[in-house]
Length: 427
Image (cartoon, rainbow, N blue to C red; front, side):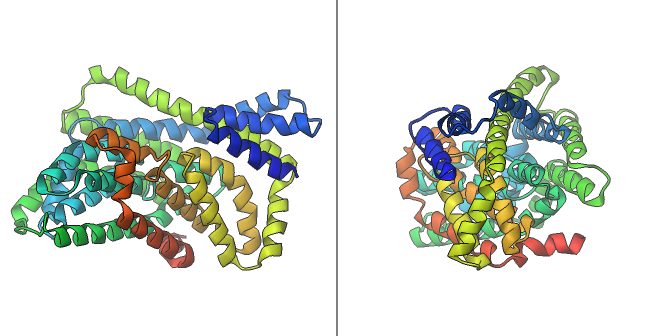
């Protein structure tokens, strides 16, 4: 009864437009008052503060700062130039450049919004000039940008790892192949659109000299994910230390090598990063309060028993996870969606024998799809703002991209080897 009440209150407050943090806190407070549970309301405050106190959460603002550093200046243009030299000659090549550049940039920034903004500001206009429909160009930028939270380093995976006590290194490794799979399927869509419409039928292959020069120009930026992931996987640094290392390296690359960022720009960058980090941490604190209530009322056990009564198959459980996460992704950003559902799904996954790393990848892939799905899709609105095309018009042009994303999600869900092979090799 309490579980149903909690779910109903949360969905009602979200759909009524209540700010997310207040919706979460209202959902935590009302059951205590309505059902007279007897928990002191002071415990809400203590759990809110305790939720943001762990030292490992320092990695979140540090990765945000590193992503901001690499998303400013000419890093995006250099990545686009390299992707164009590598992929631009094929049918649908300009669309493939968007996908390839988004994958590379996502491996640097770890942010879908930064990815979409940096690539979209350059490529949407270029695709429109080539003959692509502006709505499709904007939709491709919105969809490809979300690969940035699947491939490492990924802030949603970082948070899932911290909340669930799951190895961040394993999660980062597990996200690599799924991220590449999303990118590959999006490129197939670009190939089909470019060839069938005739707007981008292919061109002259780039010579090796030009490809080499563009690679050398991009190489310092490409080394950031190598530095972060190599340090974590080798055991040389923790994820938090890797985030600090990323900030130092980002400063070095943008100031000393590329020289497109200056110390006078640092205050505005830090303010932007502070605002983003504060929003994330406040949401973490609020969801810690709701998680405390969920745990005390043994809601995970109730859900486990209910799902097991429905079916003992892990396949059915994973299907339910996908359905729930896709629905939540329509109304919530990735971080709160994962924070709210991880405490419920983790015990259920263990009871069904589902690897927690695999579960984390599935959850992140679901919320990535939500990022370019109306009505709340963040990258969709970024692409709309850059292109000047309405959100609904963009969404209507994305049918093949949605189909590709769902196919990728199904393969990742039911072929665990796609996620688990790399972590198992490095264990």
